[in-house]
Length: 252
Length: 252
DNA sequence: CGCGGAGTTGATGACCATCAAGAATGGTGG
DNA sequence: CCACCATTCTTGATGGTCATCAACTCCGCG
Image (cartoon, chains in turn purple, yellow, brown, orange):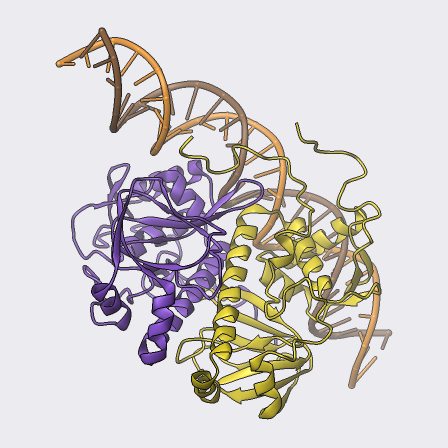
């Protein structure tokens, strides 16, 4: 009884279930996935700080916004577009930890230098404020401090969920969870465009480009996703979803 | 030129190299791995807080110290023994994010409830202080606040390193890195006892118990580790280490 | 001595990375 | 407008790594 560990008990769980953990797996952190977040929370202390003072920047696709090792002196708010937060290992392997989109914060860190690189995926507009200013404001406004800590903690949880997903789930399920989480923040029933290419997705989910492509084909063939072209997808309103038409598994 | 991504350029790097990233891969965070840390940093604001007021607890092996979902109202300092910080997925898969040992902090979080479970691996002694007290002290002592943020940021980096290691490295290399990091905090040339069992290691490194066992045998056969019994190991002073006797790879 | 748990080792198959080649897409210039 | 090329995406074939099932050893304990 004292060692109830892996995969000994409950095994037959539908791996396609989206809601409970899956939706939290990917780093859309500032706002809980329940809220559609067509626009970010404008009432938070951080957001109001960005509204009063900030400097707007434009970045071309694939340009570097901030580089691993640079001084961590700025905090960004994504106004439009998508950025990727990544590191590159010594072997040249890239790992994308997070895609940040409209309304999300990038650059909350307790360190002097960045420990990752941020690049623009498509055309990106950000608002920037100096970090010193934020920290200074924290002294006056404890709720701002709390917001920052909550943000870091959410990031931490996000990484831990990703770690779990890495060990647990198979390639096509991981892709499906990623797409679900991506779609969750847009309530539209229309097709959703993926700003990032297959390689970005591969480096985010820890698989090869070919496997990503195969997983797309697989999901499409099984009717789990609806693929208009390579970068426009839709998740069917679980017509045949969440329970396969052919009852493959069944609880014993 | 604009898309230098994975594994295209530099490929032939010795996967056994311990120092640069490997040593940082596993979550011994409060103190940099350079310092042997036979005893923790007693000068930090957090530590002096623990010295002035704290409540000592004892925990039996495999007992739960704090449970996922409980109110996050306490911060712990490990005095002796080893704890594991983990979550269990819906499928029953356990993921151990971190082993925390003597001198390390557990329970720094920006959330109201714990997002993971902490269990004792062996006999564990901790000092506990209420979180509210720490946060209260932060108002007076900005260096304490900074320490907390640095701690969270270090945790975040640790998870990201683990993610990278998951995608990049193979089983036996991951095990070797884990053992290296574990040994790094004890400068002794003697055998080092692993407090945790094979299953714990497996759930930490994301592989099966059998693979862990095979990786141990493999490392032993190759002379990378020296295994007295199942839980006592030593890393040879790179007699044949860090460069394989047979020059398998070579930079082109 | 028998028992149970932890660790090891072997055999098999699943999954995925890799290599390779073919389709689709987009941009450029005639 | 179309031909051409480059890039991205897709699909096929193959092999490596590792999870799984199973048997066996080792050790402590009643």
